[in-house]
Image 1 (cartoon, rainbow, N blue to C red):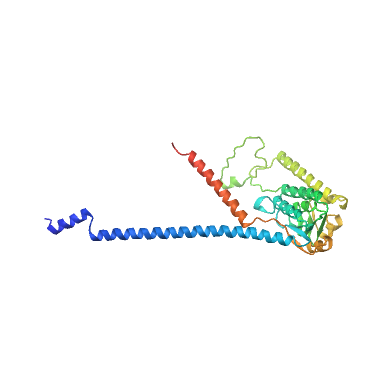
Image 2: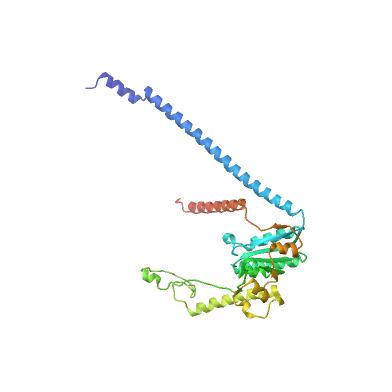
Length: 329
């Protein structure tokens, strides 16, 4: 049988207005308020932190450029543009756009008395190399009073020599690796690999030759002949560019275009280079400018941030667009 006290406690529980309950609610409200206040403070802190980061990048970008420009206009100098990586598009190496931007910036400065293409590269993309070669030749015609020299360091081969041949003169070290005027395409063959692993490969194509040079299929003679024809066309363009650039300096020796590479000493004998020397020698003795200024275009941290930010926004917009179109309405 329920007592009077039990009835009173049950009534208090039902009404929910006991003192311990009020204290608990007050504690929960205060804790929630403190948490919201803390969250707002952190949110504000991170917003200011991000804003400060952007401001710092802007200051570094603009202040750095202004210092470079101020120094470059003080006295006569040689402009140096470095090609010290594989020649390739975008972020894969040194691209044509990077070299062209450096050239344009150098030609705008009336204190530049000569341009040095400082090369240390095994070559790379024939398209990027051809674009640089064409741009150097065109700008040389527009600014005939400003000589362009190519200086090869450890190696200036294949596409890198393609670029070098556009200069007025080429210099290297006696031990530099020079030449490799050729084009190559390489891949592996895995004809029996999948069968041995018990893997079935399913490929569907539209076009009789769409699977040409497929590494998992036997090499067809027709496909091989087509690839060799394409390589020969690119090689012919390479040879023509070198002949235009070097002219009568080249000795009459067809091995020059065989894809072989030579030491700087032999390259001198073949007419592939004009002499021995580094960029200091070229600047001081040939351009007659003691000071060198680096005009190599390099993407700044701000450029990378903005490009990635733009790519991220674009990706988000595409995702939003796709998700919106997939909604059931």
